[in-house]
View 1 (cartoon, rainbow, N blue to C red):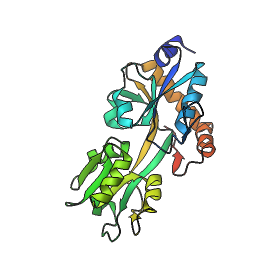
View 2 (cartoon, rainbow, N blue to C red):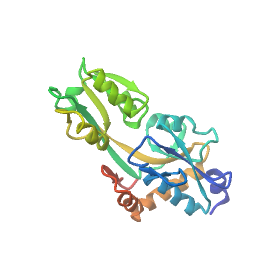
View 3 (cartoon, helix red, strand yellow):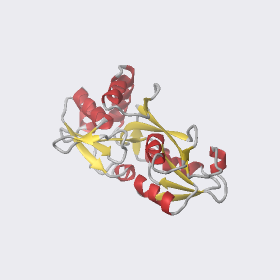
View 4 (cartoon, helix red, strand yellow):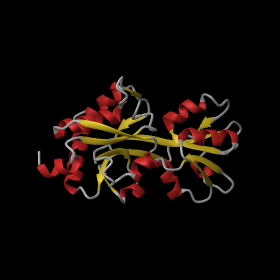
Length: 241
């Protein structure tokens, strides 16, 4: 292992992995010691094993908070959705897995397609700094985005504010729709959230190493095995980068 790679990805002798706790597909539980468990923590542990160093999890409540800490010496790698806004400060790998994002609409809604939703007068509840929320910021032209800090907050706003649509990851919406009589999910996807591994842009050697690690993890079946191990619905292995 190149000393330069270790110096960039584990400068303290430990791989400090930033983990987004709000992604319920990638973080599915906690260990008896209180560490996060799931596909993302296991990917970080596998990376640390490749590097020959221990792993330390650095948890964040939201992906936005994790991204804000890029380059501040808090984490060495971050497991997070790869979005252009975040890529200004973070060098991302290609995705290792993908999650579909779509809309939930209330009972009696006349909205049936993505084109119907992006129209004047439609209000969309969204977790604004989630990866799909950032996509909506760039792509919604006529509807109004009602942003919340958390996924649960967006759901509450959708219900109590009587909004026309709720944006979210499809696996979460499949759970939410069961609690809302008559509500339904728009078929298809408006985007796929690309879950990747990133490091600060000041780490070019480390970034190159991470890209190779992710491609090997997909090709070897590691990512597929982790998805199966944690029994995650709605998560799929991303195609080769």
